[in-house]
Length: 286
Image 1 (cartoon, rainbow, N blue to C red):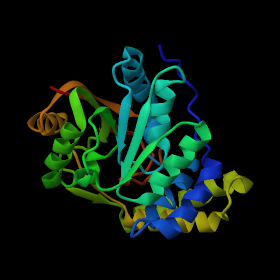
Image 2: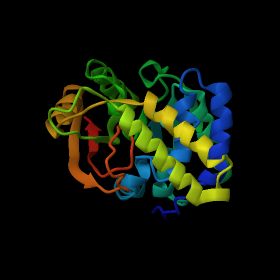
Image 3: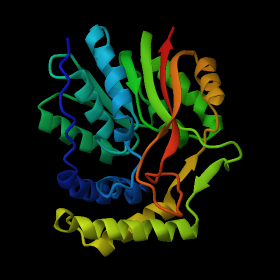
Image 4: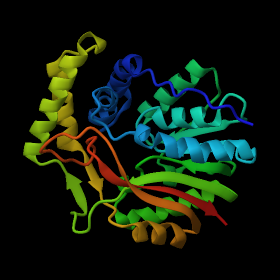
């Protein structure tokens, strides 16, 4: 039986590391990977921690069954999703963990985190759809990944998940569910961008010496992030079910619920920490 371990994410130490890695390893995504951990420190990121109970319950249950030791994280902004897997599986559970991302920065960060925990980690720098076929996994998991793909490309993602899973393997994921009528692609408006940067400036000032950057530098990074980020919307649970089942995965659990987060008055963006509706999903390869 697995014994859960504490979820330990040393963001104060890893945020400067992510910024340094992004400056050399990112192609066109340094604005994202070099800033994301600072946004998490400021409480301005919709990260996997908002679903910690879901991941702990589902992945912990799979760990206790003893039949799902190999786990692939498909797409990760940093090491947070691998950290949730490690915490859920616990010290007493066998875990063969792997991470794939098309950018080397979060892959190297994940390897750094695994080194801190003294555990092996298989890493792949690749678009998951193009990933050379490793042995099938027992679990694929990710956070807010479906919305990174426009609708025409989502069937290829789900088909690849199915190919990467053994029969009976589980896909565990979350995705934001936007209200009907939301634009197909959501971006920050100029006013929302300015408000987001102002919130980052205020939060950074509160953290003070805990950050390695001065508050104005953090705020400028937040501004560039808000100007650049775009999310492809999902607008219903039916849309998710249809996508997964047409791709050969049987939905075993899907709950859409309001996920709380710090509310930034008057602002809304695709990756703010504002309360929002999210689907938490478990699907099985038949």
